[in-house]
Amino acid sequence: MFSSCFPELSMAQPALSTEIEFALPPVVHNEQGQVRTVGIEIEFVGPSAERTVQALQEALGGRLVEEDPHAFALKESAIGDLTVELDSRILHPGKQAGTQRGVLPKIAALFGFAARYLVPCELVTAPIPVDRLQELNRILTILRGAGAKGTQDAPFYAFGLHFNPEIPRQDAATITAFMKSFALLNPWLRREASPDATRNLLGFADPFPAEYVRRIADPDYWPDIPSFTDDYLAFNATRNRDLDLLPLLHHFDAQRVRAILPNEKINGRPTFHYRLPDARVSDPGWSIAPDWNRWVCVERLANDRERLDAVGSAYLSFEGEDKSWANVVEQIVRS
Image (cartoon, rainbow, N blue to C red; front, side):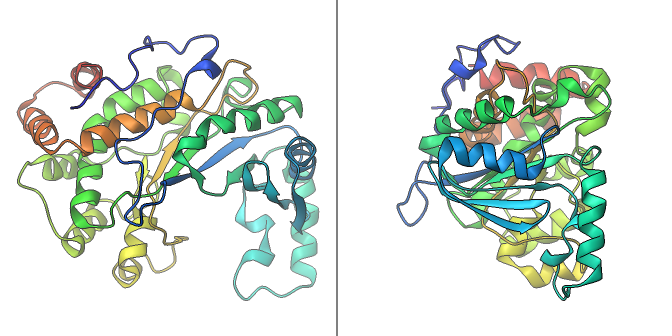
């Protein structure tokens, strides 16, 4: 049954959101019988990448590795491997294929020391088992202690929070079900992730085109992977989507994706890439749990074929605006 995703929550996130538990998805194990994993990305400003990773090492242990002056890895910490770096490709030329040591890396390093006041840092975790997500609150506490700042400290900038959950089954039906569920719930997801309308244009990726949503919402739409990929690329040949499927589709059929996007930075992997525009890192009451739990709502609807088809049919017959559909969806996920 599709039960309420988090009945304990009101519309507003409570003051002490770190007490909220992380919900488990309906499918906890992958096809190999292992607990599914999810990687997390958090953007912030304030301390340098080096100072941040040092603070993490002090609290979590592990081995610190400098990849360049603005990119560091923490290996074998208490919660796994982490990386922290300035979030700009041009500041890390050594990571780009064919780059030679010499003048260019030195220029990038110097530029990075100036850019760190304008370019956010990004903390990226290695894949974490979905039943251990509560441990991530330790990271937020460490970041706040190091002086990290987030969205609420920058009125004209939105710092991102990204989830990279492992796909539970690597088949066409699973990909299609997740895409249907996300597209149908997205007006509600976007409203809940950033209820302040004045911020909506700052950090959100573009929503999926209405024509594409109507196409995939059809209860009869259950294509094979090549057909799904062709349809997705026809409407979404961009990384600028809330749910970016390009890494997943590249994992299944790199040649098909590269034929349309030959130069785009895409690393194929069997995960979804869910982008959120709000990381309130310096807020002691902020947790990633509510955002994760809303993602679990997507998984629960995707895992309920009968209900998913019913919601798709309802969407196709709905004549209101997105904000009105968000109200309909809210009742669905809370029922």
